Image 1 (cartoon, rainbow, N blue to C red):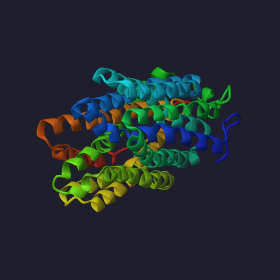
Image 2: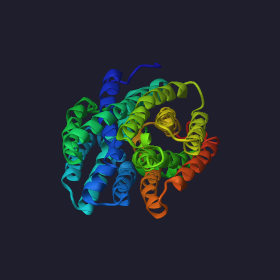
Image 3: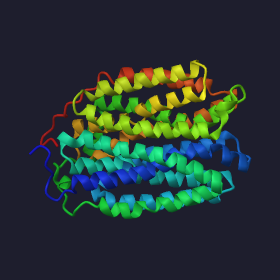
Length: 410
């Protein structure tokens, strides 16, 4: 019956609460890494490209291995994967805090935390949701989980800025490492019962599911659009603070760390509403049109921000608008994957789409720093972000959201 759950499934309330807490921690901590950019590079005498490379590698590792982690979670259950992720997350943060060598810092912040994020963020949580929530509530539930992650971003930005201010960047990372260990007890609440029904959802193999997805035109278009999402959000989260600092030479009021931290917090706050309403609207309207509108709106918002005089107020307004559009793509994109292919391999297939997102994230983080060091300005990267937004708005329009036809379709 619609709205009911399979025997042996986790209760809806439990999945939403603890799935939301997990992404609140994992996404909230990472959202504040941009605040560490200047304190760490100045303290260690590094250029911005070094820090940008660490965050870029983190996103690349996260995306490249997300399909593998997702497949393991689909096959063996998410509990062990989340526990592993919580341990790696804490170890990576501690490693960043203790590293004075650029290579060690990059290995800790790039490799370890990148691996941790494959196990503690949306793809794994959405796999649990997909298996335990029926289709009539799925996109709504995904919106709720994304909103929780967004609230984590809003919550953690002032926390991380406060830790940096009062304890310094290194000790702040150590305290965040302690906080990451809270993911371990959360994992217990997301442990699916033995014999969960998703194991009996048809007899399609992993190889068959991969071939089917990779040759599907809608999957290809969705994947290309998600690249743009990653580029835009990671470039802004990593480089907005130093961008504003550079502008302070002409507009002194814009260079205060409080402006950047407030802007990033506003992104997190308005992201709560954006992701929630994306889930609500995704139940009523074609999700491809909503995605196209989100990408087009991002392009307009970025263009207005960089082409008009920048003040603290315009920065906060930009942050609010971008926040509403920030991760609203996430529940819609994952719901389309579930709608087309079913939920048996949802974590893995969502991970494949997410790999494209993280390729974009790598480019946004690394080329933001590289092009800044080469040109002395972020202007070119802003223009690229605008052009990509227009591109993504167009390629999402032809996506077909209907379920793929196959024997014993799931």
